Amino acid sequence: MDNPAQLITEPLYPEIKAYPWEVALFQCRPVRRLKHLSHFGGASFLSPVVHSRFEHTVGVWKLTAFYFPNDIELRVAALLHDIGHLPFSHAMEEALDFNHHQLTETYILEPEISTILQGADLDAQKIISLLNNPSAITGKGNILGLDHLDSFLRDTYMAGECSRLPRDVLRDIKCTPEGIETDLETGNYVMKLMLADHRLFLSPIMVAIDRLMAEAVKLHWQETTAHNREAFARKTDAEVIAILTTSPSFKARKLIDMLRYEPFKIHINEVETGEGYPISIRKIYKKAPLCGGKILTELSERARQVLEDLKKLAFHLEVVVDLEEELVD
Image (cartoon, rainbow, N blue to C red):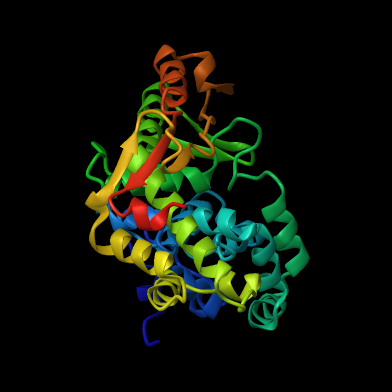
């Protein structure tokens, strides 16, 4: 590529100059694969927020390099932190009983990445250790980290819910090895974005789509002998769609067609009747920025209210579809 910077051009954050080995990593197959995985998973069938895990990866790497320009290992860890994600993310982890952290380690130790790391005099095991332990990327304890900061800024920006440009917000944010620290006003703004982001991707319809994607895969696997979980985990969203559209399972084919073209046939029951699939929220993020060395929720009633509002997002509902007589035993 004549201009490698084109790989990492995006509108949210200041420009960061990549080291040669970072360019090589951005160009390698496991990282390029992220361009073909939606950050919102199955919810991208319905949501207009459709950026990929590649854009998110660029964002987390940029934030890490912005705050820790000389920490080469942390920058590389940020660049590689999402490479193990399955197609359609957490929906597939449930369906396949497969942990994406396992695949991340496998990719890093394989020759394509480990050779690049070795050429930069970087230890693959140290990168894996960084990814397996709390850091500024994840945030230590209950402190907000750079990974989720990018998600909250990027998702709400793409949904048109940001009142401040992300690059302007960064001027009021610092990052320590424990996680991000900011002033009271900016901290409350970040918490507001966190709540908005959760309302986007944890709405019942979005959770329902992920559940139906998982069911489609389970139905497919019930009628095929090609049971290779790791090979399936390495596929892209489009490859999984192609598999399901030609599945030997009639129900799997009907489900994926409905998710792609007729999501309006999905209905949410307020109570579980046993006629559909139960749905609930898997996990709610509960971290917050530091402010003056203290967790923001210790200082701000508004921040505490965000955590209370996040708890209220929890639900136990049921998803049914117009095709239920064909899809539900």
